[in-house]
Length: 185
Image (cartoon, rainbow, N blue to C red; front, side, top):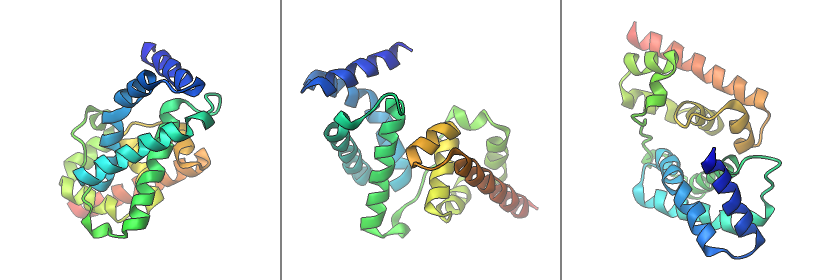
C-alpha cells in the first residue's frame, strides 16, 4: 500500500512540473515490470529495450493527461505498453521472428487450469498455440495468466468492455483445454 502512495506522489510531482527525481523514481519502479511485459511479447532483448524506452518516453510526454480517477497508474502504464507493442508488430510485420517465453512464475501454479496446462503440454507447444491466436485474444490471455491482471484491469488496458474481455478469455481457455485434451489423448 505504501508503494501505491509513493507512486501517486511521484506522479503528482511530475505532473506539477519538471521533477527529474520523481520521474526517475517512477521509471525505476516500473522498469523491470515493463521490460518483462514487453520481452514476453517480442522475445528480443534489444527490441524489448527499445520498446520499453519508448513506453517511458510516452509516459513522460502524456503524464499531464493521466487522470487518477479513471484508472490506477499501473493500468494506465500498461495501456501505453500495450499500444507500443502493437505498434512494433504493425511496423515490423514479422511475426515469424517472435517466440514468447512462458515465465517460470508462482502465479501459474495458483490456478488449477494453469497447472493442467503445464502438465499436459511442453512449454514450446503452449507458446506455439498461443502465438497463433488473434492478437487481442493472445494479449488478454497473457495479461490474465502471465501478468495476473484482473478482468477490469485488462479491460482498461485494452480499452474494451469487461464482458468482452471475459468472453475472450474463457473462449481461449476452452480452446486450450480442448487442444490439450486432444494432444494428450
